Amino acid sequence: CVCVCVCVCVFSSGISRPKTAVGFVSWWVGLGILSSIGLGTGMHSGLLFLWPHVFRVVTAVEKCGHTQFESYSDMWGTRGEEAFLCRIDVKAADQEVGHFSLWKKVTLECFLWGLGTAIGEIPPYALCYSASAAGKKNKDFEEAFTNQSSSGEKNALSRYMASWLEWMLRLVERHGLAAVVLLSAWPNAAFDMCGMACGHFLMPFWTFFVGLVLGKACIKVHMQCTVFLVLFRESSRNVILTYLRNTLVMPVPLLGKEENLGDLLSDAILRGVENVQRGGGVG
Image 1 (cartoon, rainbow, N blue to C red):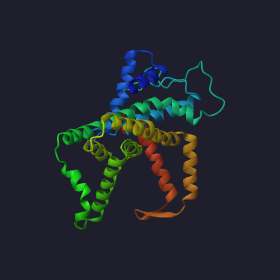
Image 2: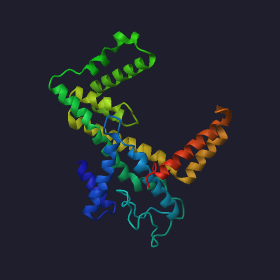
Image 3: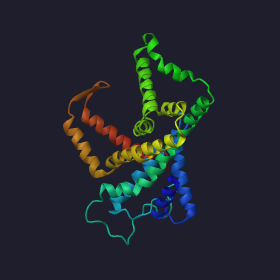
Image 4: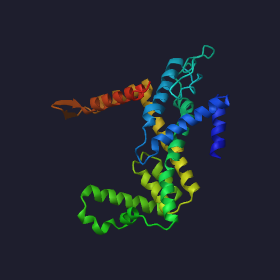
């Protein structure tokens, strides 16, 4: 079902050549896999590739005044000759292109990348599922459920992490699919442990994977996309920066000099946008 939806969306987006379509899907799904695979040691492909691509789309929309330009060839480190070029046969809109139109222009790339991050979470699940199905005991999970007995011997941070782990494991055990969607629908650095918990409790693969796709590819990545679209768009970014500078005027001591909190946050946002624009050093 997911494959059919992806194929329909890809060919409806203007990619007519099967070879180009395969390369397009492989690129964005592959980047998503690289981002989440490896128990948290994966490459930050979102900051390196996806969000710089979104920034280029937003810049082209602001320049052209419409979304009728080619952007799908921005993959595998290269771009087509007509990528992000304004079409002379399309008249610019009288008013600013809406946020929804911008989102539609990049939603396929975001979904495919999110789908890749979901696929990258499968190995921890598969390892724990195999061990649990074979009847092997998992000491990490046993300790997580009995951490309260030795909590006095741990510092505050260790106790907090242990309680968070125990809550997450019990949530997965009780609520199954809903818990996977909930835990994967926001930037959760400890989600690898959730995947391991799902395998430990022998959650069916399709229940686990559907929850991942719903949480990561249908919710989280599009929430992130909405935030980045607002920050990348010059008009909305200027409104946010002006509000921060005019509202948060309390001084913050920093490195021997005082700076307003609003100015500090505004400068951090601008630096972040510039880093994404450069693609973390990638062209």
